[in-house]
Length: 81
Image 1: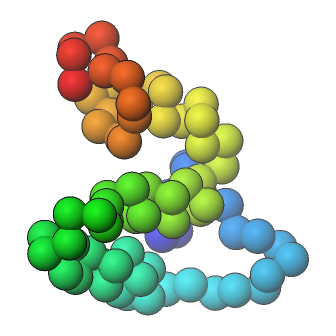
Image 2: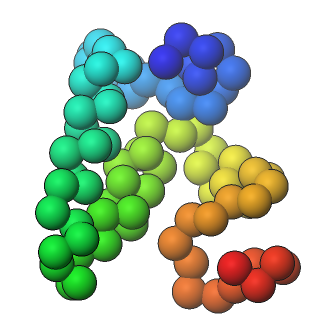
């Protein structure tokens, strides 16, 4: 978490005054994935993407710049994925 903050990849919300530890984030992201294989109406990857997007500074630009990004999109990227 300190590296992502230092690199500007995520930013703390000064209004929330939350001190989130890496373990807490891991549990928060991992637990929504439980049971995703048994329910075709539940897209755990989409939920995790939305949770992580809330942490990222300038999310739209950072996602667009990442090579090989496999985020949930309705249209394929240049590689057809």
